[in-house]
Image (cartoon, rainbow, N blue to C red; front, side, top):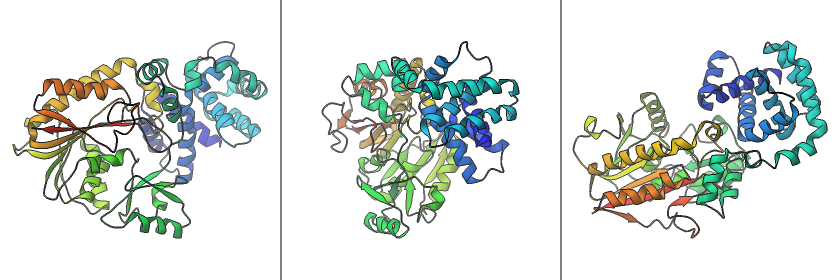
Length: 427
């Protein structure tokens, strides 16, 4: 536990310093290449768990301190330990003891007494501290105040549930490859391996317990892929037909690209501006025995990659705030700023305007984000329709079935992430 604590402290500390959680973990794996899968999982659990409810743990820690801590590593260590005491089954005395020992490994030997006193004080005052921190909205909802305020204004009757969903550990959902196996047969395959799963939507299976991909039956052979049920809606919503010319404009890491190819024999171009992330697209296609034209290019600059032949379908899964997938990317809550939303919306508008001329008459463009903010979603589409009189929004019964939400908007819940879809048809 000491080693896991020490490494998690480094990861959490880097996130609090402004780095993404993915980048912080990648840096830890590079520095400690000898860690086995179990050790990595332990570090990830501590880092993700601490960051999911960070505002609560920070409020608890601040209530226990007489003055602010100068050393960021010491603060990160105490936050990780408080998460262990609150959110894991680890024995409290072991957590405290290991945190004190971790001080030595982190070069914080002089802080051992402080760490011991703070954590033991937390255990003694836990009930009173809980009541105290609940008075703070960021601590109660475990999101920044600006995020809470925005969701409350945009979803007055649903914001609390959406915030709570963003704090939960997400389920592991699979997309069954319909080209290779029926979902009912795949569920039987799971059962033969003593793995329980539940059907969801048209092609999803949600596992009762998360598993490493190497332990998922048929994963290496291409029978299934990891993908949230909300993201799995994109392929069917594209309304694909064999032989169509299709563009996935922001394709990496390739989940929606692969799903489209599983659904229909189309001529698909997978485009992304990040060459390194395109390698993941190629790897996903290879595992699934699928084929696409993979191109490194900027979707906002078609002149640099488009051959002039129009597409009949375009998927624009646009870069966004990721506010709908905070449970999978808890660092987003603490790295994103309120001032980030407007520039993201401008970038999305640029992509829509740039790609529209590449769509054939009668063709359809599916605009998607993993955001819950209106500026990136319903308001974005309304502005686009004002600019383009040759565009009409098609109805999407699969996602337009909640009268309390804007058309196409899915809020995160126990079944799926937060997502938005709008299907735009060209006259």
